[in-house]
Image 1 (spheres, rainbow, N blue to C red):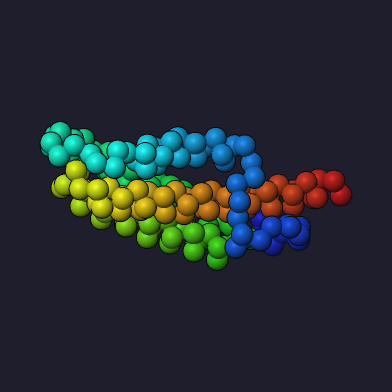
Image 2 (tube, helix red, strand yellow):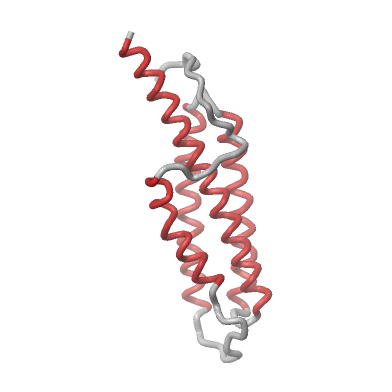
Amino acid sequence: MSTKVPSIKLKIDPQDLQIQTFTVEKLLEPLIIQVTTLVNCPQNPSSKKKGRSKRARVLLASVEEATWNLLDKGEKIAKEAIVFKDELHAALADVQKESQALKVSAEAFTSDPCYLPKRQAVVQAARSLLTAVTRLLILADMVDVAYLLEHLTLVSR
């Protein structure tokens, strides 16, 4: 990769990111469905313990592993990026912070899955993590677009 800063002017404000591509939307759809499923739980869940705690811990471990994989790839992108470097590092820190918040609230929830406030805390933490991941993915796409535009400009000359 070139160390030259691309001279392409993008009409993008990294502070005001919105999903504008079908690909990003489709990538996030399964996560949105899972968060929606959590949100649409009954207001008065059964007071019977259903033995789901072990499964919840396994699910939490898989979410944590996926988040760490995303952070690892994001750090590689941020290390190589020339544009939006600060924004990428901030987005990575935000994903890490929200992942830790989800872990804490999910562990509390698995100890008492029938307690509605703990469920609501997990839902809020999951939404926050989803927002942070979305921001990171959009920023990574913006870096790719900047490089593609720069290379297109070089080829067209």
